[in-house]
Amino acid sequence: MRVKTKKGISYPIVIGRGILTSCDDINDILDTIADKHSGAPFVISDPLSFTLFSRQIKKISGTHLLPRGEEGKTLDQVSLIYEKFARHNIDRKGLILAIGGGCVGDAAGFAASTWMRGIDIVQIPTTLIAQVDSSIGGKTAVDLPHGKNLVGAFHQPCCVIVDVNCLLSLPDEEFRQGMAEVIKYGLGEDREFFRWLSENRKSILEREPEALLKMVKRCIELKASVVGEDERETSGARTRLNLGHTVAHGLEACSNYSEIKHGDAVAIGLVVAANLAVMLGTCQRDILAELKDLLEYFGLPTRPYKVFDEALPFMQRDKKFISGKPTMVLPREGKKCEVKEISIELLKNAYQAAVR
Image (cartoon, rainbow, N blue to C red; front, top):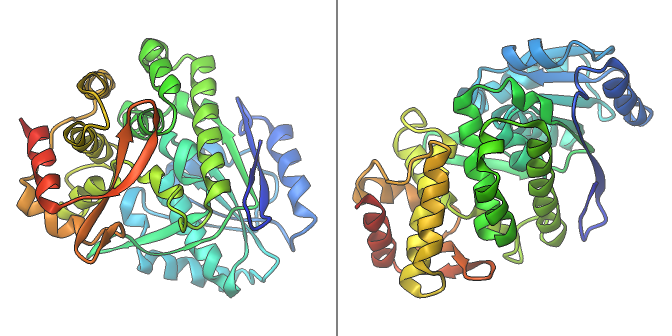
């Protein structure tokens, strides 16, 4: 599979099982990339991901290990990466491998996008959220105390390597977080996939390998299609992938990224968005009920835990608030989701309806 953008950028996504535990598989893939680069790749990871998933990589010029989670997505951490790049003489033909979850991919991608005005990076996502979403499409960013992902750049990887066997050892909590992003694709982009998720929920929860492979592959297909249509989120198409994220980012920032995880926040945001769609008449209540049932099956929350007035100032810092008005991504009956400007009063009503 390949991602192809309208600006002519194209790169492969390699999806399979056991890629990272097979010395031949991972090194064969990296060897096809190496000719364009100087020296061995530099690895950015976190301690656990590096220990579990880097052992079969034969050539590494250096490493930098980030703290796990959002603590690794700060300007201070990126500054430490730059220092390592300088010490290891990473030049404009250097290659970075980002091995880990979404936070590793975001921080490593941002560092790669800004070092010497941009060097190549291979994304090797090891969590469900990263495999189905953040590793594909070139969005890189770090957080500020004022909000999530406020400092960033578009920087497409030169390759993405997805080994779904990584998900077999993923802690239940992290797998649950990823399922919110998976369900987002079904609700917003592909209602047939949404039904497939409902019908195969048991196999997915038990992490049957073939079910995982099919699920991850479909999410990647959907993400790649949208990125190809709207790489830099200018036409509105890519904004659809932010379904549930305005509320989610507000809740995360409101708690200083310490009280709620990203997937849990997205799950709540999906319910608020579905409530809005019901109120506007673009979505039936049975879809809202099916959404809540599916989220709850995977242990995801469906009710906001902060009062609206406490969360609102942080939602207003989201990039989709224009001139103080929320532009929300909303599901639609039988169609792909839409981007629609609404009033703060309507957003409040939908948010409070989710609380009840």
